[in-house]
Length: 351
Image (tube, rainbow, N blue to C red):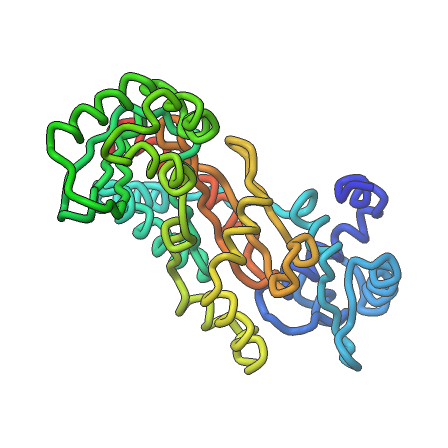
């Protein structure tokens, strides 16, 4: 049963109470009681009436009460219904949109620097963690490569991708290779692979160079052996830009020593976040919200990740806000959406 169907099974009164419980918990970070809901929200119900509705919502699994507290907190199921059906998304003001555009347009034109600035901006606006992945080059269309001898045992491979990305890889060789040989090999590879995606090159490289694999420099053989390194992203350090750590750690959840230790472990192991982003990558123009138990890794069961895509030509990357489930979804979701579209627009207009 989908979350939206579950929401339709709630009465209007139940929806109103659930919405107000989650909104209040997001604002206060403390369990929400019936008296608080009755007095703080103009819903025309007595504390006793609210208490009865809360008992029903708890029975249905949308809220829970921690320990012996009289207050209630949302469950993952409650958050899911809230995000899918009950939240009122904020409209970014013209001032906010202009500020985002100016900060990103005034950032360094270098892709990595722009993405780093984006992660910091997301962290600042959301008061959570801003996470931006570098574009996945596998869908990028290969234009050309250059081979430059750096030393007697090192070759620099400079690969240009149609979207404007440039990838550099250092390779170890057994002996110095004459410049003319490097130029000839680069020309052959450019002729055979220009216009193909890097994913296609990776899959067919060996068969397409079989006739020259035994050339005297041994470089083609080295390329065959290093095809994964050359034509895919490598290493989480290349993939993620993280900003807003201080904003995240200022949240009440991390006043608890165990929670603080847990988030530090996650930040020190970026592969956890990379794995989740790859699993939850949304379709173009959509927003993915992964809440608590929906995250496969147990270390992320107390967190939500809001994700969208940006595009650089044929390549795509993701921008995300990562934080406790008690995040301001009404603000975070439109911010992630707008920043993703702004990044795509900047690259589409030549940065």
